[in-house]
Length: 427
Image (tube, rainbow, N blue to C red):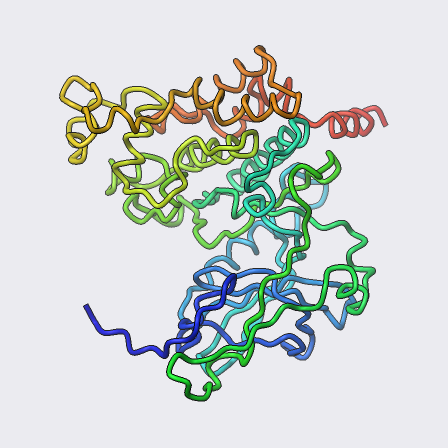
């Protein structure tokens, strides 16, 4: 293994890996910087392995934007997808209800810095992601249903435009800000949400900082509110991060190249590594995401577990996998014998069945809030989950079939949206 010669920095909680501020890595940004002579950096919104995201004021249009600054060595594929999803519609073309539930590309540009040339783009800023606001918290059942329905609409729009998202999970589902946010001056923003939280950056060897890294790290700003405080009108999700998205008609993405986190990754990515990923891979990930929105506990472990452990959980929850996968699963003897019975060492660590998972991860917590899911809704929800989590991709419903399923139509479709659509039709 090649030795890592990158400069080491003292760790700062809640910020990106500082060692990535090197040639080919992150672009150094400070609050107060101006990008493209237009975007005044106000605070940080977040970061990922290949980008940092900043809240900025568009000094031309007097509104706030989120500026995503990619690392110098990352491809700019995401902007191509967002351009396609944001493309103007032909006159009199019907508007897909999920179109407003994916980011609209506002601007695209490049910045040159000490670490290279970075592609950047701007979109409307959002509050936070669902992972942040639902961790150890529970949405009311009405809000959870509405979030689920709208997320499916966002995926339906993405699929209708010929793209597979490829990375659906709570971290990539954001919540829209109210339109009144743009009315805040920077001073009012800081008064309401607090001044930017910065921490001085220091090298482990005590030497001076180079221009490759900012003098201060910025801890991301939290603009949201937590799940239990969400009202139905707050249930405005935005499916984000299209960095893994692709068009299967233009590009072949093999199962072995799937980067969805293991807890949300469709099993064909492991067992058919040389086969192209298809739209049903999104359906599997969508099901695991809806489960987390509805309940408190993920359907499969989100801890850092080995791929074989996730496979064993799939079987515990869903039942037997296809026989051809079972026969060639090399990790099987650790968990099951030839007849499918759990080994003695695995018996105590088994994952609960689908019905028991619902009881443990959903119903138990909702009872504490005095709002347990009734038996009719539970049956419809579990039926949908079984179909979306079918081991065989070809047996999963399409996203449009998910939207017209019993649970979506009878329970998840938001009442206020139903009334709005009825009034539009009657008007």
